[in-house]
Image (tube, rainbow, N blue to C red; front, side, top):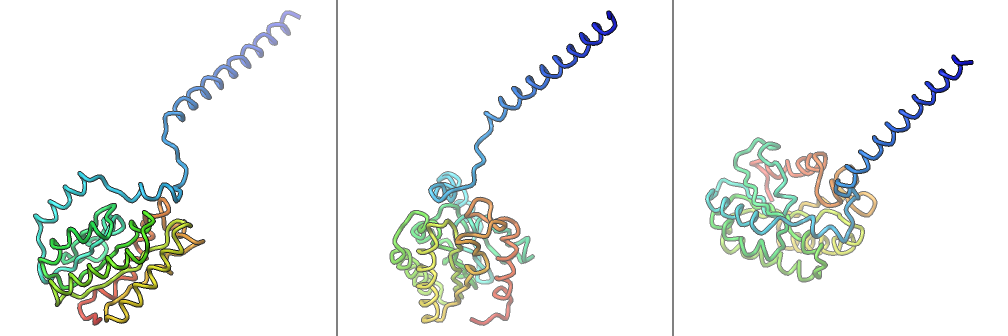
Length: 243
């Protein structure tokens, strides 16, 4: 009888210790989880903040751009964060490629720093503009009008430069209609003015937004997204490409 009693006490003691350990582990993880940032996917209302770099970061990059002037052999990629994050030289193994992307740049921001690009009279300029403006719910007519001003300035200041206009990528369910309207306007304008329009949109479109596997947050691209973009651009970067 004493042996059975001891066995019962021993078993109860082990069970109590296990319960106590589980309680302490749960408490530890709950405490640390409460310190972690939320991991919810980006929503349309969050998109705008995700597009922006800080003013100080952009100021630093602009100073850096001006300290590295380009020349007539260079190919300049001008745009916002999608361009800024594009590893152009690593992809194309071409030192002529100059990345002039700045996160959060609207079309007006790009207009204001256009001289840094046109002063070098580059051989080609690839434009990626309009996404940030659409995310800010600006009218597509206004965005399109500012794009035309940028193109007109490039033609005036560096007439030998070939211009390539890239479509806006699909992002955010609420943005699809204005993106389609804007891309249509741009495509028609380019066709009428003998400018190359590169329609990236269909290759990235999923269920009324960016394909999930190509996006980090509903706007910015994964590595797989940049590989697709690189493959689309490759023919336009060949030396013998004719507009």
